[in-house]
Image 1: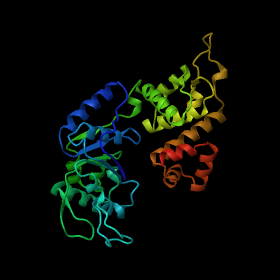
Image 2 (image 1 turned 45 degrees about the horizontal axis):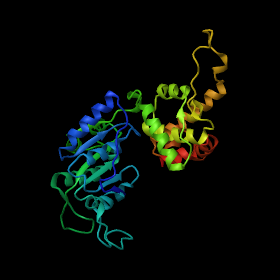
Image 3 (image 1 turned 90 degrees about the vertical axis):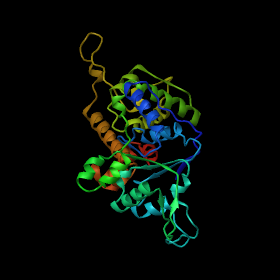
Image 4 (image 1 turned 180 degrees about the vertical axis):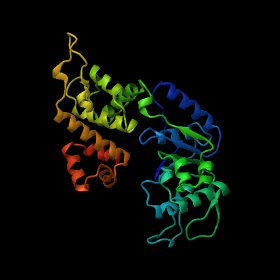
Length: 329
């Protein structure tokens, strides 16, 4: 369970129109103490947006608690969120107050809400409408003063149309809706974020602070960032580990940029990668994207890539992606 007391500040880095607009929406929605639905691609920063909503709200002094529905077995959602009495479930030697009461006076983020089963959606809707719940093993209603913020990368409107998500819950959560922009639509923000991560990791791991060389800058701006800010953070960590000079190169980032022309205006053959290098780089990119999209779940990533789990583990080792897997998981 993630929790903090509201005094640790986070901030959005960047000055793109997309981020300026997002900051404005966050400030306005923070003042309205109602449920909020945050929508955005995986790795785009939805949890940070939820943190900012909490920071700018009247609930700042209260706790910020998270529950990730994608990482929690469906059968455990209600016991974790609503809590349970001693003996109500197997192995329950003590009462569990649940995450709603843990967030009393503050904010509860329900991450990846699109992964909830219909039964759990019904239980969540009941709490939103009544403001009370019952612990497993008890018939006593419990009132709670908690703001619910939900986040998802899924298309809930489509899920409603096919009956996978309750339409009434969607409208209850989504009256206030925030769309988090993907990194590829944030322009030069990628450079500001990269430098922020460089400084952060340099302090954390006590390594030399390095800047980005010209090719690294071009590579960062040219990349499509399918894994968004999470992918950028992982690449910067890799670059700091790989870099040997005073600056970080495109190769350190794992993003090689070819020169368009040589000094005489013709294409420089030395900059054209071999087919083998292209295939290897494409394979590495596909593995990273699959792991990031699957939240580090190797079985899911392997199924998407249509390889066996054992084969994917070998590929992860061959491409030295172990630290990416740790960061994703």
